[in-house]
Amino acid sequence: MTEPRNLLDRWIQSVNNGDIEGLLDLYDKGAILIPTFSNRILNTPDKLREYFEKLGSRECLSVGLHEKTVSIQEIQKQIFALAGIYNWRFNVDGEGLNFEARFSYLVDLSRTGPILHHHSSQIPRMLS
Image (tube, rainbow, N blue to C red):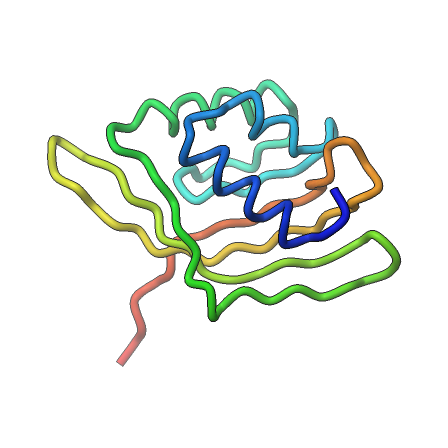
């Protein structure tokens, strides 16, 4: 993988296609995931697998980018920070719900599993 945006697109496609193996292949063996829909920090391949399998079992699961929010910063050669907002969609009790979340990744494109750190959190309500 030569471009950080290609990695992001592949991550989105893996989620939307229900490709858990493809998704997990994007993460380094020592990756840390601070997930959107869990209050735990996931730091082993088994914990990431359990999370994505549970999330992947949601009816009508999909995620889409808010393109204008995507930011990519080169830290050094092959190492990038990516950030932005995406929108998760899935059914809960038969009702289609949307969950906007912000995300950040630290990736090293020289690695087989380039995602080293991934943080995602639902966008909180604004305080008045």
